[in-house]
Image (cartoon, one colour):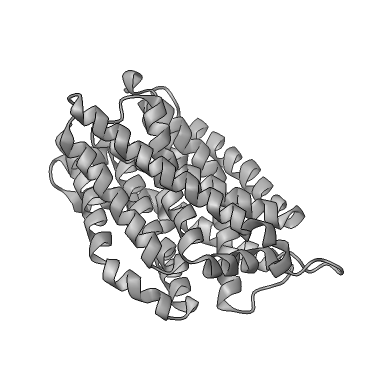
Length: 349
């Protein structure tokens, strides 16, 4: 592991994980407060780093693949964002309940994808095969998306009603509370909970078996420790607050660290201990499309048939906008995963 990689792992993955662990007592108190606290935390996290973490996607092909020009890099990613993002927004207008469920599933995939890439970056030895990494993805993405459905289903459902309610204004349309019923029946909650619990036990157990056969114990302990922190965080904290803090402090920072390493100049600065210069380059590159992302969110709010009349509506419109940005972001990230051999460990670049 290079010095730049080690520094990125410490700054963008290890230290934020320790910070989230330290915040557990605060998270445990959040169910006592109104959901508006969570909405504020989500808005702040999105403003500070959440939106920026995907705003350098247009430069990823340029920096990760030799021979790709700046023009081609920007053009390909721009088309992906326009086509895929537009399709997501259209899906919410046509079938909001299915689109919301699809967004949850996509986020499950993407947040697991991000954590597995971070573990690969850290050089853990207990996930040597694609199958074990996919199992880790199910765990890492399922903790933020699935555990709140077990621990705080009322607030989870409230968010679903807010999102779906933005698009159910036609005469005769079912109320949002009725429309989302199939997503929150006991069988759904039990199935999701069973998947996350079984995947956690299997992943931790298989990792320990790898340690018994010679893999580094340190990497496995870190993986298991992070999983334990995430289980506690999403069991204890109110869902909107928990997701808002996790999105900024955990997922987004890990991806920022990965993108800093893809930029040769920023990586060199990080390796020399000049974190300010490395982050300055990232901020410069991300600034235009970060602003563009907020414009896109505003556009969704303006276009929503029900309009924006309360903090919950603002959160709902933001989530729809983020969903539109997430699908092309997942595609770009998956391409980067392939280039770096995240899912084929033996072919890692």
